[in-house]
Image 1 (cartoon, rainbow, N blue to C red):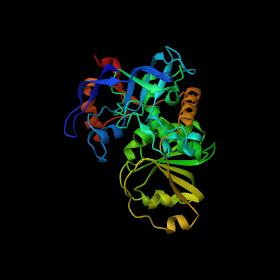
Image 2 (cartoon, rainbow, N blue to C red; image 1 turned 30 degrees about the vertical axis):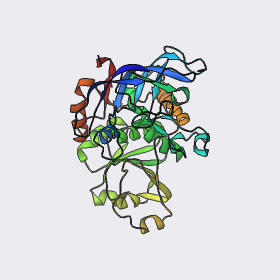
Image 3 (cartoon, rainbow, N blue to C red; image 1 turned 90 degrees about the vertical axis):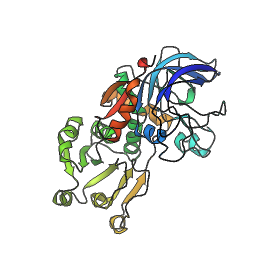
Image 4 (cartoon, rainbow, N blue to C red; image 1 turned 135 degrees about the horizontal axis):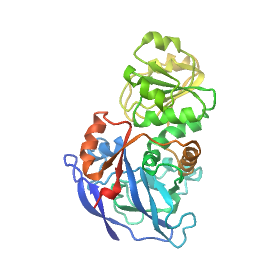
Length: 348
């Protein structure tokens, strides 16, 4: 085991502070990565505060990791020292079940291993995330980062990026489709960028008129204010696909009325109970409400390659690790456009 510097918390009431953690010794299929940048996801805050009731302390968050390969195990074939790589929300799975064989490790039937707050299959100890100077991950859960992209702006692609790319890709969004992205935040801003890059007629659907200018700068063709009933009625039955990124309980009925016959709204934000849905809104038109969780490793690599080809990255604010507790507060206040990224060289 190797001791490295990290930032973590000992309880839901405590701030994050500098600590030391242990990383496992390099195994034959492992890649050791020097972490250069790590994105700050709202899930990091939920975990730190034990909002979901499953946090094990000490917790070191961070699952939007970009770095450089330091060394590789003897049987690693895909990576070499110096390569630019990324690690997302998971670092292991059984690799044997039907989901894993279908390149959907996030749905591993035995449970995928989270990058943090999971159980390390190799040591039996807790996994620690990217708020640290290095991480050791099995080769199968490492992805290559296109060299033409701004590295610090790549980090959020490993969670916010794949979370929005995967449903757009799975439901075959294509040029000419009318696509609505509901909610403009860390996820929503990536949804706009991807839908636009895929050639869709992209609408930002928001409760806030003051977000219109930003949405158009990000690639939205138009903005639909969901509180404006007349505007909403004008678009009833016209959308080919809706991506709902709203992270809290809300009423999905008005959005379902926007869908065409046989079209789908995919939920990626609200992992909690929703307001009651009126069955008529899906029965009348054979419409669907679906969900999506990040993406498998193969699709994550496809997403990064797409970003390299189309010059897609996140809109970020770069911070030092010492400012992470303030950043947590600002995320909760929706005071960031649109993702914090930690410069891990500031961890000394």
